[in-house]
Each structure stands twice: as structure tokens, then as C-alpha cells.
Image (cartoon, rainbow over all chains, first blue to last red; front, side, top):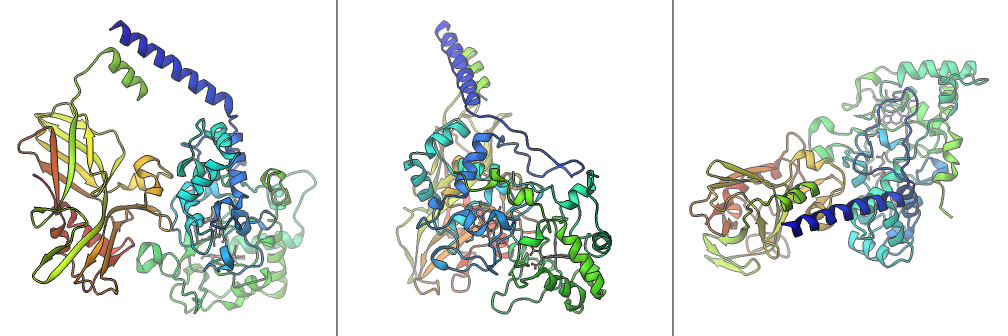
Length: 343
Length: 217
């Protein structure tokens, strides 16, 4: 009995020591929620945010080691300067130049998203990263191969130990590291935000002010402030592309009511995230405004009620709306060194 | 959990080891999974049968023991046994879910048997495959005679997880649970339906037969 007690006490002591050591290795950081924003959905509950975890995720995000032939990294399709979307590509291009079927979405304020991908097929941020790794038109790799390569590298085993307290590299630690990085991509310092925070010397021009009014009247039910998405799905009336035949959320839920419903995207940094829509069909923001103004087919059976009445903006209103949308550009986000290629 | 183990070291409680093993059966006869079964000029063979067991509970004369593992991945070819530590080996009945509950399905990235690397996870439509059965049959009208059923889905109204309670008549060190694949195959016209790879109506329909194929010998 005394032996058992001794072993037990020793075990307790050892585990305290280990816990202490792994805490020494990583520096926890606070996830800052901008003032007056809603509570984030992703709370880092089972994945405590640390400097080491974030840096590891950042390294992985920019490392083509994740793709089959080591040519494509996450950043190939999600470029920081364009709000982490694939600039100038209607649908994303991956390995061997293979084309995907959808436009890469921006990676902005993901911690406030309930559900991911244009069709909402991904139910939590941590499990998103499996998709690009395995997708034949993206990185075309396997989780086994990724783990094998990371284990062999001279950098990663130590980085994983620093971040998660164990050298073992698993699907879980890879995904958690990526999530620490992507969930940290918060954009909240556009002119719009500065005006809302009543920062000194910052004000909307009359044009922007009028644009905001139009926006709040016609757009904000879906593109709701401050995230500029209500995080639900809708149809804004786009006709189905005859080649891609994308049915949107129906592919996931198999329910008629979800036909042609797509995730409502945020409009933050919209100036730089072209081309627009799930299939990248519009190159210019002007085209999008024209579409909402007079391009919508009001007889489209999937069209959301709020857009059934034609908007018919006049030329001044179009300019005002555009001017407002440009106030959503956040250069401190697009050029934040903390998010850029790690040197 | 560590603390509980530690307390048990100080105050030993009697634990029993109990093995539950899952054995493939066809028409009541034991089979080895990949062998070809012939009858009336038709044939069938299986090359993969894997499924999740979760929320396992044993009942023994009023005592209830709950498994604290989230889920077990059973592979009828390889890992077809579980070792449990119930409160008594005299088990009267056993209950479990075939598949993964909805809470676990939305819990982000998980480890061990629930690691997506095990090939029982849909990445594009996040969620676990509860039950996977693949093979070949003369009845299948695909070019290579193959069939594949990946049954899963947790979103309403297409939930596929099933619950089973099995009485255990004469409890022994090892409880054998037979899985009679003929009872599943009987429900499917392989000439018409030979592939289900997504959640939906068909997956729900076929999942409803799963509890019928489990039985304690």
C-alpha cells in the first residue's frame, strides 16, 4: 500500500512538472474582440491560443509542403493583400493548374462564422483544413503523407512541441495550428470602423454617408454590420452557371428549400477581393452594384424576398454606394506583418 | 480523469476486464470478411466493413456502467474487439449507438478513433461516416461489380445514428456480437442501388436496418 501511495504521489508530481514545462514552452495570447462586436463563435475552447501555435499555423499556411508536389500552399489561393482570396481567378487554381469549381472566399473574421464554404458544408473551422489538403484540384495530398513529411522536417517537430507540448504530429495538432492562424485574421480597422469608433478627425464624406444609408436600407439585412454578413445563406438571384451547375447549399442538405442558397459573404475589404460571387462572375464592384440595381431577375424562384422589388439606383446613388463600400478597406489588415509570409 | 485513476490507486476498486468482440456472419454462418459467399448462382464478397460504436453502456443486476471513451472504431477485418472494464462481468444487457451523435459531429477536430485520418469522415460535408460497407457482388450492375455504402449524416431531418440494446443471455469473459451482413444486403436491390456516399434520404433508409444486424451470440 505504501508503495502504491509513493508511486501515486510520484506520478502526480511528474504530471504537474510536465504541465508546468509545457506551459513554460508556450506563451498564451488573448483573442481580442473588437468593441461592440458580437461574441465570436470560435472561442479557442479546446485549442488555447498561443504565440507558438499561431506562428506554427502561419508557417503551415505559407508552406507548400502540404501539397502533393510541394507547389501549392494555402496562400496560393488565399493571398493576404487581397483579403486572403485568390486574386483575379474566377474559380481557384490548384495543383497541376487544375481548376476548382468555386471562387476562393476571403479569410476575414472567420471566428465569427458558424459554418464554412459557399455551401456551408464545413461545420467548424478546425475541420476546414482537411478539405484543401485532400481536394484533387487543390493540394491533392493525404493526411498520412502530410504528417510523414512534417515529422521528417528539421523544423516542425520542435515547433509542434513548443506549440502543443508534444512532438507527436497528428491531424488534430495540424488543424488546430492552422486554426490559430486563420481565426486570428481579424479586420476591424477600416475607415468605417474608425468612424463608428468616433476616432478624432475621421468622418464620412457626404457621398459615403449617403452610401451607408442606401446600404442599410437595401443590403444590411444580409450583409449585416459590423461583420457585413449575417452568416446565413440566401439567394441574391444569380442564375445558375450552365457549366458549373452549382446548386449551393442543396448539395449539403438535400433539401429543396436550400437550392441555390449560398453563404452570404462579408463585404469587408471588398475593394480588393475581386472577382466577386461564388463563381467569380463579376470582375468589378461596379458590375455587382449594377447587378443589384437592375440585373436581378425578379422571377427567379429562389430569389430572397428582400430583393424582389427592383432597386433601380440612379447614377449618383450607385457612386454613393460604391464610395461607402470602399470605406470597408482595412489597410492595416491587408498589410499586417504579423499575417504575412514568415521569414 | 488522471486524478480519478490516481485515487483508484489509493483506494483500489474491483475492476473486471470484459471483451466484446464483433464477428461477421452471413445467413447465420460465420464468415471471414473477404471470402466469397455463393448461393443460388449469385455471389457476394466484402472487402471493408467498419463502423463506430459510441455511448456504450452495460447493465448488470441494477448496476450501470458507462464507457468513458467518446467512440470506438470497429474494423471487422482488424480491430474487431473492445476491452471494457464494467463493474461486473455478469452483464445482463448492453446498449450502444451505431455511429456518432450530433454533438460530437460538430465538435471540431478530434483524435484517436475519431481522427479523420481513419477514413471515416467526410471533409466536404463535415461529419462522420457511421457505417461503411464495401464489396463486390454478381448482382451489382457496376462495371467491376462493386458496391459501396457510406452511411452517415447528422443534420435534421436526415439523422442516421441508430441505437441498439442487446440482451446478453449467458455472460462470459468475452461477449460476441454477431453482425449478420445478409440482413443488410437483403434490404438493398444491388442492381439498382450500389453506392451511397452522401447523407440524405437513402442513407437514413438503409441506416434504419443496421440495428437488425447486431445480435449477441
